[in-house]
Length: 184
Length: 184
DNA sequence: CGCACTAATTGGTCTGACCACTTAAGTATG
DNA sequence: CATACTTAAGTGGTCAGACCAATTAGTGCG
Image: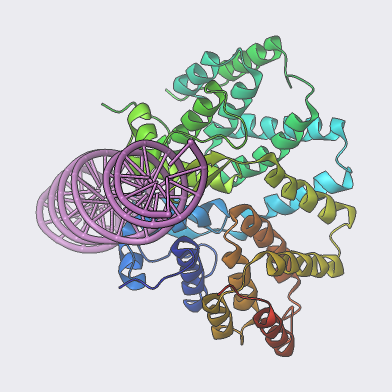
Protein backbone atom coordinates (compact mmCIF):
# COMPACT_ATOMS: atom_id res chain seq x y z
CA UNK A 1 0.00 0.00 0.00
CA UNK A 2 2.76 2.37 0.92
CA UNK A 3 5.18 3.64 -1.64
CA UNK A 4 8.68 2.78 -0.64
CA UNK A 5 10.32 6.12 0.01
CA UNK A 6 13.75 6.75 1.35
CA UNK A 7 12.16 8.65 4.22
CA UNK A 8 8.50 9.43 4.49
CA UNK A 9 9.32 11.95 7.17
CA UNK A 10 11.20 14.14 4.75
CA UNK A 11 8.66 13.45 2.07
CA UNK A 12 5.91 14.69 4.35
CA UNK A 13 7.72 17.91 5.07
CA UNK A 14 8.13 18.41 1.37
CA UNK A 15 4.46 17.72 0.75
CA UNK A 16 3.33 20.27 3.26
CA UNK A 17 5.71 22.90 1.97
CA UNK A 18 4.46 22.26 -1.52
CA UNK A 19 0.88 22.53 -0.34
CA UNK A 20 1.67 25.89 1.21
CA UNK A 21 3.04 27.15 -2.07
CA UNK A 22 0.19 25.76 -4.14
CA UNK A 23 -2.37 27.32 -1.82
CA UNK A 24 -0.67 30.69 -2.24
CA UNK A 25 -0.54 31.18 1.50
CA UNK A 26 1.12 34.32 2.76
CA UNK A 27 2.68 34.92 6.18
CA UNK A 28 -0.03 35.03 8.81
CA UNK A 29 -2.40 32.74 6.91
CA UNK A 30 -3.76 29.61 8.54
CA UNK A 31 -2.90 26.18 7.26
CA UNK A 32 -5.51 23.41 7.07
CA UNK A 33 -6.00 21.65 10.39
CA UNK A 34 -3.85 18.67 11.24
CA UNK A 35 -6.78 16.35 10.65
CA UNK A 36 -7.43 17.82 7.23
CA UNK A 37 -3.76 17.59 6.29
CA UNK A 38 -3.69 13.99 7.38
CA UNK A 39 -6.59 13.15 5.13
CA UNK A 40 -5.36 15.23 2.22
CA UNK A 41 -1.87 13.76 2.28
CA UNK A 42 -3.10 10.28 3.16
CA UNK A 43 -0.88 10.00 6.21
CA UNK A 44 -1.59 9.71 9.90
CA UNK A 45 -2.08 12.75 12.08
CA UNK A 46 0.98 11.75 14.09
CA UNK A 47 3.12 12.02 10.97
CA UNK A 48 1.57 15.34 10.10
CA UNK A 49 2.42 16.56 13.56
CA UNK A 50 6.05 15.47 13.29
CA UNK A 51 6.39 17.25 9.98
CA UNK A 52 4.73 20.39 11.34
CA UNK A 53 6.99 20.34 14.36
CA UNK A 54 9.98 20.23 12.05
CA UNK A 55 8.62 23.14 10.01
CA UNK A 56 8.09 24.93 13.28
CA UNK A 57 11.75 24.48 14.13
CA UNK A 58 12.71 25.71 10.71
CA UNK A 59 10.81 28.88 11.51
CA UNK A 60 8.29 28.34 8.75
CA UNK A 61 5.07 27.71 10.66
CA UNK A 62 3.74 28.45 14.12
CA UNK A 63 1.09 26.55 16.05
CA UNK A 64 -1.50 27.97 18.43
CA UNK A 65 -3.34 25.58 20.65
CA UNK A 66 -7.01 25.62 19.85
CA UNK A 67 -6.38 28.14 17.11
CA UNK A 68 -4.55 26.42 14.31
CA UNK A 69 -1.25 26.38 12.46
CA UNK A 70 -0.10 29.56 10.77
CA UNK A 71 2.58 30.62 8.34
CA UNK A 72 5.20 32.54 10.25
CA UNK A 73 5.54 36.26 9.85
CA UNK A 74 8.70 36.86 7.89
CA UNK A 75 10.02 38.97 10.69
CA UNK A 76 10.98 35.83 12.56
CA UNK A 77 13.34 34.87 9.78
CA UNK A 78 15.34 37.97 10.46
CA UNK A 79 16.80 36.33 13.54
CA UNK A 80 18.87 34.11 11.33
CA UNK A 81 20.24 36.99 9.33
CA UNK A 82 21.07 38.91 12.45
CA UNK A 83 22.82 35.92 13.94
CA UNK A 84 24.82 35.15 10.85
CA UNK A 85 25.97 38.70 10.34
CA UNK A 86 26.88 39.12 13.95
CA UNK A 87 29.00 36.05 14.14
CA UNK A 88 30.85 36.59 10.92
CA UNK A 89 31.59 40.28 10.99
CA UNK A 90 33.09 39.73 14.39
CA UNK A 91 35.18 36.91 12.97
CA UNK A 92 34.03 34.67 15.77
CA UNK A 93 36.44 35.84 18.40
CA UNK A 94 36.02 34.28 21.81
CA UNK A 95 35.09 37.52 23.51
CA UNK A 96 32.44 38.16 20.91
CA UNK A 97 30.86 34.77 21.43
CA UNK A 98 30.56 35.51 25.10
CA UNK A 99 29.13 38.91 24.30
CA UNK A 100 26.63 37.40 21.92
CA UNK A 101 25.51 34.80 24.44
CA UNK A 102 25.00 37.40 27.11
CA UNK A 103 23.07 39.53 24.67
CA UNK A 104 20.76 36.66 23.79
CA UNK A 105 20.17 35.84 27.42
CA UNK A 106 19.51 39.45 28.21
CA UNK A 107 16.92 39.46 25.46
CA UNK A 108 15.29 36.38 26.95
CA UNK A 109 15.45 37.97 30.36
CA UNK A 110 13.53 40.99 29.17
CA UNK A 111 10.95 39.10 27.15
CA UNK A 112 9.96 36.38 29.59
CA UNK A 113 7.24 37.24 32.03
CA UNK A 114 8.53 36.26 35.48
CA UNK A 115 6.19 33.94 37.36
CA UNK A 116 6.65 32.15 40.65
CA UNK A 117 6.88 28.84 38.86
CA UNK A 118 9.61 30.00 36.50
CA UNK A 119 11.56 31.55 39.31
CA UNK A 120 11.33 28.32 41.26
CA UNK A 121 12.57 26.39 38.26
CA UNK A 122 15.55 28.68 37.87
CA UNK A 123 16.45 28.67 41.54
CA UNK A 124 16.44 24.88 41.54
CA UNK A 125 19.40 24.86 39.15
CA UNK A 126 21.12 28.04 40.20
CA UNK A 127 24.24 26.10 41.11
CA UNK A 128 24.89 24.98 37.55
CA UNK A 129 25.68 27.74 35.10
CA UNK A 130 24.96 25.80 31.96
CA UNK A 131 21.68 24.34 33.13
CA UNK A 132 20.60 27.68 34.51
CA UNK A 133 21.15 29.49 31.25
CA UNK A 134 19.58 26.71 29.24
CA UNK A 135 16.47 26.66 31.35
CA UNK A 136 16.15 30.41 31.06
CA UNK A 137 16.25 30.23 27.28
CA UNK A 138 13.83 27.32 27.12
CA UNK A 139 11.33 29.28 29.19
CA UNK A 140 11.06 31.69 26.29
CA UNK A 141 9.43 28.89 24.31
CA UNK A 142 10.53 30.35 21.03
CA UNK A 143 11.92 27.52 18.98
CA UNK A 144 13.86 29.74 16.66
CA UNK A 145 15.42 31.55 19.57
CA UNK A 146 16.30 28.27 21.23
CA UNK A 147 17.88 27.12 18.03
CA UNK A 148 20.03 30.19 17.65
CA UNK A 149 21.02 30.15 21.27
CA UNK A 150 21.99 26.51 20.95
CA UNK A 151 24.30 27.27 18.09
CA UNK A 152 26.01 30.13 19.81
CA UNK A 153 26.22 28.18 23.03
CA UNK A 154 27.89 25.38 21.12
CA UNK A 155 30.60 27.81 20.11
CA UNK A 156 30.90 28.91 23.67
CA UNK A 157 31.27 25.41 25.05
CA UNK A 158 33.89 24.75 22.47
CA UNK A 159 35.93 27.53 24.03
CA UNK A 160 36.01 25.60 27.28
CA UNK A 161 36.41 28.69 29.41
CA UNK A 162 34.19 27.61 32.30
CA UNK A 163 31.04 29.35 33.47
CA UNK A 164 29.52 32.35 31.76
CA UNK A 165 28.23 33.86 34.99
CA UNK A 166 29.30 33.58 38.60
CA UNK A 167 26.93 32.17 41.18
CA UNK A 168 26.48 35.66 42.58
CA UNK A 169 25.53 37.00 39.20
CA UNK A 170 22.93 34.29 38.74
CA UNK A 171 21.50 35.02 42.18
CA UNK A 172 21.32 38.71 41.41
CA UNK A 173 19.68 37.75 38.14
CA UNK A 174 16.87 35.95 39.91
CA UNK A 175 16.51 38.67 42.53
CA UNK A 176 16.16 41.36 39.91
CA UNK A 177 13.54 39.32 38.18
CA UNK A 178 11.63 38.77 41.37
CA UNK A 179 11.59 42.51 41.93
CA UNK A 180 9.84 43.09 38.62
CA UNK A 181 6.08 43.39 38.72
CA UNK A 182 4.22 40.12 38.68
CA UNK A 183 0.56 40.03 37.72
CA UNK A 184 -1.87 39.50 40.59
CA UNK B 1 -1.94 14.34 37.74
CA UNK B 2 0.07 16.56 35.43
CA UNK B 3 2.05 19.46 36.76
CA UNK B 4 0.95 22.61 35.08
CA UNK B 5 3.90 23.62 32.95
CA UNK B 6 4.09 26.43 30.47
CA UNK B 7 4.93 23.89 27.80
CA UNK B 8 5.46 20.21 28.40
CA UNK B 9 7.08 19.98 25.00
CA UNK B 10 9.98 22.14 26.06
CA UNK B 11 10.04 20.51 29.46
CA UNK B 12 10.45 17.13 27.82
CA UNK B 13 13.37 18.31 25.72
CA UNK B 14 14.96 19.65 28.85
CA UNK B 15 14.39 16.38 30.70
CA UNK B 16 16.05 14.33 28.02
CA UNK B 17 19.00 16.68 27.78
CA UNK B 18 19.40 16.49 31.50
CA UNK B 19 19.22 12.73 31.40
CA UNK B 20 21.99 12.71 28.81
CA UNK B 21 24.20 14.76 31.07
CA UNK B 22 23.40 12.75 34.18
CA UNK B 23 24.15 9.51 32.37
CA UNK B 24 27.52 10.87 31.32
CA UNK B 25 26.89 9.95 27.72
CA UNK B 26 29.55 10.84 25.20
CA UNK B 27 29.16 11.31 21.43
CA UNK B 28 28.38 8.00 19.80
CA UNK B 29 26.70 6.52 22.88
CA UNK B 30 23.21 5.13 22.64
CA UNK B 31 20.32 6.67 24.52
CA UNK B 32 17.68 4.55 26.22
CA UNK B 33 15.00 3.37 23.83
CA UNK B 34 11.93 5.52 23.25
CA UNK B 35 9.84 3.13 25.30
CA UNK B 36 12.26 3.28 28.21
CA UNK B 37 12.42 7.06 28.05
CA UNK B 38 8.64 7.23 28.03
CA UNK B 39 8.43 5.15 31.18
CA UNK B 40 11.34 6.90 32.90
CA UNK B 41 10.00 10.39 32.22
CA UNK B 42 6.37 9.36 32.77
CA UNK B 43 5.24 10.65 29.41
CA UNK B 44 3.87 8.97 26.33
CA UNK B 45 6.10 7.60 23.65
CA UNK B 46 4.59 10.07 21.18
CA UNK B 47 5.81 12.95 23.33
CA UNK B 48 9.23 11.34 23.65
CA UNK B 49 9.39 11.10 19.90
CA UNK B 50 8.49 14.76 19.40
CA UNK B 51 11.20 15.79 21.83
CA UNK B 52 13.75 13.50 20.20
CA UNK B 53 12.87 14.85 16.79
CA UNK B 54 13.54 18.34 18.07
CA UNK B 55 16.87 17.27 19.52
CA UNK B 56 17.61 15.68 16.20
CA UNK B 57 17.04 19.00 14.46
CA UNK B 58 19.25 20.71 16.96
CA UNK B 59 21.99 18.34 15.92
CA UNK B 60 22.22 16.72 19.32
CA UNK B 61 20.97 13.21 18.68
CA UNK B 62 20.62 10.93 15.68
CA UNK B 63 18.16 8.09 15.21
CA UNK B 64 18.78 4.84 13.36
CA UNK B 65 15.79 2.73 12.51
CA UNK B 66 15.99 -0.57 14.27
CA UNK B 67 19.22 0.49 15.91
CA UNK B 68 18.42 3.17 18.45
CA UNK B 69 19.01 6.82 19.22
CA UNK B 70 22.59 8.03 19.55
CA UNK B 71 24.40 11.11 20.69
CA UNK B 72 25.73 12.89 17.63
CA UNK B 73 29.38 12.77 16.80
CA UNK B 74 30.77 16.22 17.35
CA UNK B 75 31.94 16.30 13.78
CA UNK B 76 28.41 17.04 12.68
CA UNK B 77 28.45 20.23 14.67
CA UNK B 78 31.23 21.50 12.49
CA UNK B 79 28.75 22.16 9.71
CA UNK B 80 27.36 25.06 11.70
CA UNK B 81 30.77 26.57 12.21
CA UNK B 82 31.61 26.24 8.55
CA UNK B 83 28.35 27.84 7.55
CA UNK B 84 28.66 30.73 9.94
CA UNK B 85 32.19 31.54 8.99
CA UNK B 86 31.45 31.35 5.34
CA UNK B 87 28.49 33.63 5.42
CA UNK B 88 30.02 36.29 7.59
CA UNK B 89 33.51 36.50 6.19
CA UNK B 90 31.95 36.98 2.81
CA UNK B 91 29.65 39.65 4.17
CA UNK B 92 26.68 37.92 2.64
CA UNK B 93 27.06 39.23 -0.85
CA UNK B 94 24.60 37.93 -3.38
CA UNK B 95 27.19 36.16 -5.47
CA UNK B 96 28.52 34.44 -2.39
CA UNK B 97 25.11 33.15 -1.41
CA UNK B 98 24.77 31.58 -4.81
CA UNK B 99 28.22 30.12 -4.48
CA UNK B 100 27.43 28.74 -1.07
CA UNK B 101 24.19 27.16 -2.25
CA UNK B 102 25.92 25.50 -5.15
CA UNK B 103 28.63 24.26 -2.84
CA UNK B 104 26.09 22.70 -0.49
CA UNK B 105 24.25 21.06 -3.34
CA UNK B 106 27.49 19.76 -4.76
CA UNK B 107 28.22 18.24 -1.38
CA UNK B 108 24.81 16.58 -1.35
CA UNK B 109 25.38 15.43 -4.89
CA UNK B 110 28.57 13.65 -3.94
CA UNK B 111 27.28 12.15 -0.73
CA UNK B 112 23.96 10.73 -1.86
CA UNK B 113 24.04 7.28 -3.33
CA UNK B 114 22.18 7.48 -6.64
CA UNK B 115 19.39 4.94 -6.94
CA UNK B 116 16.76 4.48 -9.59
CA UNK B 117 14.09 5.67 -7.23
CA UNK B 118 15.92 8.86 -6.35
CA UNK B 119 16.65 9.59 -9.96
CA UNK B 120 13.00 9.11 -10.78
CA UNK B 121 12.01 11.48 -8.01
CA UNK B 122 14.38 14.12 -9.31
CA UNK B 123 13.34 13.74 -12.90
CA UNK B 124 9.73 14.18 -11.92
CA UNK B 125 10.43 17.73 -10.79
CA UNK B 126 13.21 18.63 -13.17
CA UNK B 127 11.14 21.47 -14.59
CA UNK B 128 11.10 23.40 -11.32
CA UNK B 129 14.45 24.61 -10.11
CA UNK B 130 13.44 25.22 -6.53
CA UNK B 131 11.66 21.92 -6.05
CA UNK B 132 14.45 20.07 -7.78
CA UNK B 133 17.13 21.45 -5.51
CA UNK B 134 15.00 20.98 -2.42
CA UNK B 135 14.27 17.37 -3.22
CA UNK B 136 17.95 16.73 -3.82
CA UNK B 137 18.83 18.09 -0.40
CA UNK B 138 16.05 16.21 1.33
CA UNK B 139 17.29 12.97 -0.20
CA UNK B 140 20.41 13.37 1.89
CA UNK B 141 18.26 12.80 4.96
CA UNK B 142 20.60 14.75 7.16
CA UNK B 143 18.50 17.10 9.23
CA UNK B 144 21.37 19.36 10.10
CA UNK B 145 22.29 19.67 6.47
CA UNK B 146 18.69 20.37 5.53
CA UNK B 147 18.56 23.02 8.17
CA UNK B 148 21.66 24.78 6.94
CA UNK B 149 20.57 24.54 3.36
CA UNK B 150 17.19 25.98 4.27
CA UNK B 151 18.78 28.99 5.84
CA UNK B 152 21.06 29.69 2.93
CA UNK B 153 18.27 29.06 0.47
CA UNK B 154 16.15 31.56 2.34
CA UNK B 155 18.82 34.17 1.68
CA UNK B 156 18.86 33.15 -1.92
CA UNK B 157 15.12 33.43 -2.39
CA UNK B 158 15.27 36.83 -0.80
CA UNK B 159 17.53 37.90 -3.64
CA UNK B 160 14.78 37.12 -6.11
CA UNK B 161 17.14 36.43 -8.97
CA UNK B 162 15.26 33.52 -10.51
CA UNK B 163 16.55 30.00 -10.90
CA UNK B 164 19.88 28.79 -9.62
CA UNK B 165 20.39 26.34 -12.47
CA UNK B 166 19.12 26.20 -16.02
CA UNK B 167 17.01 23.27 -17.15
CA UNK B 168 19.94 21.98 -19.15
CA UNK B 169 22.18 22.05 -16.12
CA UNK B 170 19.66 20.07 -14.12
CA UNK B 171 19.36 17.54 -16.89
CA UNK B 172 23.12 17.18 -17.10
CA UNK B 173 23.08 16.84 -13.34
CA UNK B 174 20.81 13.83 -13.48
CA UNK B 175 22.66 12.32 -16.41
CA UNK B 176 25.98 12.54 -14.63
CA UNK B 177 24.44 10.89 -11.63
CA UNK B 178 22.99 8.12 -13.70
CA UNK B 179 26.39 7.49 -15.15
CA UNK B 180 27.85 6.85 -11.75
CA UNK B 181 28.00 3.27 -10.59
CA UNK B 182 24.86 1.94 -9.04
CA UNK B 183 24.98 -1.16 -6.84
CA UNK B 184 23.57 -4.34 -8.38
C1' DC C 1 -26.19 46.21 20.04
C1' DG C 2 -23.57 43.78 23.48
C1' DC C 3 -22.90 40.37 26.70
C1' DA C 4 -22.94 35.56 28.42
C1' DC C 5 -23.40 30.96 27.28
C1' DT C 6 -22.98 26.89 24.25
C1' DA C 7 -21.23 24.01 20.68
C1' DA C 8 -17.87 23.03 17.23
C1' DT C 9 -13.10 23.24 15.91
C1' DT C 10 -8.24 22.65 16.71
C1' DG C 11 -3.76 21.58 18.69
C1' DG C 12 -1.73 18.57 22.67
C1' DT C 13 -1.34 14.17 24.72
C1' DC C 14 -2.07 9.37 25.55
C1' DT C 15 -2.72 4.36 24.55
C1' DG C 16 -2.06 0.37 22.02
C1' DA C 17 -1.07 -1.83 17.97
C1' DC C 18 1.54 -3.32 13.80
C1' DC C 19 5.43 -2.87 10.47
C1' DA C 20 10.42 -2.57 8.94
C1' DC C 21 14.86 -2.77 10.15
C1' DT C 22 18.82 -3.95 13.14
C1' DT C 23 21.15 -6.60 16.27
C1' DA C 24 22.48 -10.50 18.69
C1' DA C 25 21.67 -14.93 20.32
C1' DG C 26 21.04 -19.53 18.92
C1' DT C 27 21.65 -23.35 15.73
C1' DA C 28 23.19 -26.06 12.23
C1' DT C 29 26.97 -27.02 9.18
C1' DG C 30 31.64 -27.59 7.47
C1' DC D 1 36.20 -25.22 16.84
C1' DA D 2 35.03 -21.77 13.53
C1' DT D 3 31.88 -20.19 10.20
C1' DA D 4 27.55 -19.30 8.10
C1' DC D 5 22.77 -19.35 8.47
C1' DT D 6 18.40 -18.89 10.95
C1' DT D 7 15.68 -17.09 14.44
C1' DA D 8 14.00 -14.17 17.98
C1' DA D 9 14.14 -10.00 20.54
C1' DG D 10 14.67 -5.10 20.47
C1' DT D 11 14.03 -0.54 18.34
C1' DG D 12 12.52 3.28 15.59
C1' DG D 13 8.54 4.46 12.14
C1' DT D 14 3.78 4.70 11.32
C1' DC D 15 -0.96 4.30 12.17
C1' DA D 16 -5.70 4.49 14.40
C1' DG D 17 -8.73 6.15 17.79
C1' DA D 18 -9.70 8.44 21.93
C1' DC D 19 -9.84 12.19 25.31
C1' DC D 20 -8.23 16.76 27.12
C1' DA D 21 -7.53 21.83 26.88
C1' DA D 22 -7.74 26.05 24.57
C1' DT D 23 -9.69 28.80 21.09
C1' DT D 24 -13.17 30.22 18.06
C1' DA D 25 -17.72 30.73 16.06
C1' DG D 26 -22.47 30.77 16.91
C1' DT D 27 -26.55 31.45 19.52
C1' DG D 28 -29.78 33.40 22.39
C1' DC D 29 -31.05 36.63 25.75
C1' DG D 30 -31.10 41.11 27.86
